[in-house]
Image (cartoon, rainbow, N blue to C red; front, side, top):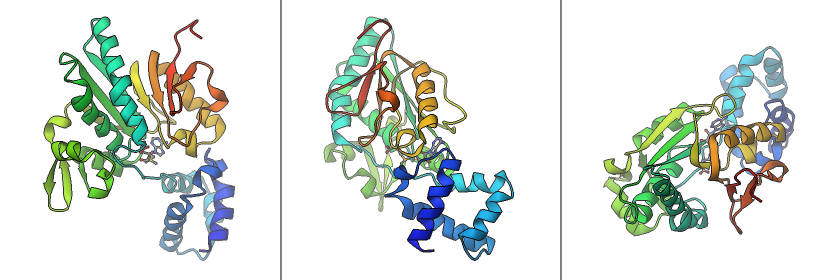
Length: 275
Ligand SMILES: C[S@@+](CC[C@H](N)C(=O)[O-])C[C@H]1O[C@@H](n2cnc3c(N)ncnc32)[C@H](O)[C@@H]1O
């Protein structure tokens, strides 16, 4: 399939799925390859024939939507964000929990891929927060719409490339080597759970102190769906809690209830009446 043809197809199909072409421009190769494979599996000659299949009913659109899920992730993606989370945000949340007589800091990683983001938080907690707040606990829920991602997250085994941004001494303390595979140590799985969930249809029960929704809704979803997702996130994030998005993303309509932290894709949710 020619790149030009696939671009034309995606520009036609993505809005019909509530997705946006600009988010896919750079990663279209992944989606085009999957669509090409689908054409071969169905014995179709070209994308026009595939449009006919799509016109026949909703089933094929469901397949197509799964081809549009981009699985890229890694530990410590956007290092500056994780440094700030460890130095300032997680300790602030732990201190706040202590002040309120609570032990638990609750986090949600939405679109968690293979668990890289959720486990990055868990490692941060042990290394940067636990020593000063030994009584506090973290619970991290990772959700993703893709069953293979959830299975990989639960297996917690990674190649070296996924860990290249993690500080080396932390990597050595967090993983056991098994040939080419790095296996997360069992104590770092404690408090981390994963659930198969499509964020468009279902969200976990809050309230959360910290929500990460990075490189999913605010990159790939069309604006109305972005607004709907933000509204659902907002209902699950407590006032004073933090929302982290991807480093190339922005919140729709500049989300007045959210105060950005200088220079980072991190927002603090304002309390009622707070400016
Ligand atoms: C590009 S990865 C981002 C992973 C991680 N948040 C990060 O920034 O490194 C996007 C993830 O969102 C998942 N995803 C796509 N559509 C979804 C949906 N509707 N609901 C939940 N997860 C979805 C994909 O399966 C994929 O694992």
